[in-house]
Length: 56
Image 1 (cartoon, rainbow, N blue to C red):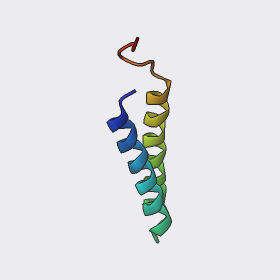
Image 2 (image 1 turned 60 degrees about the vertical axis):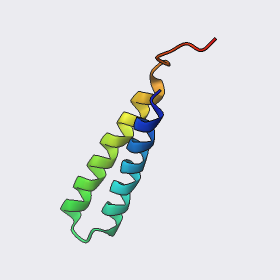
Image 3 (image 1 turned 90 degrees about the horizontal axis):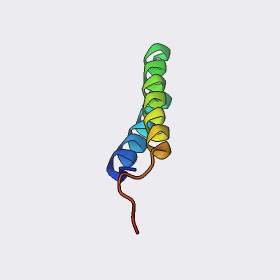
């Protein structure tokens, strides 16, 4: 798992959810929520990947 990418995608998902909550336009809020979902998918994908290097 690449911690930097994981942290980035988690942060962006949260930022997009906050932007959606603060948005007064429902269409724009929906776009922010869609982006949040995409970032959340990346988080799930990274969590499911095996480590690149096996530590002994």
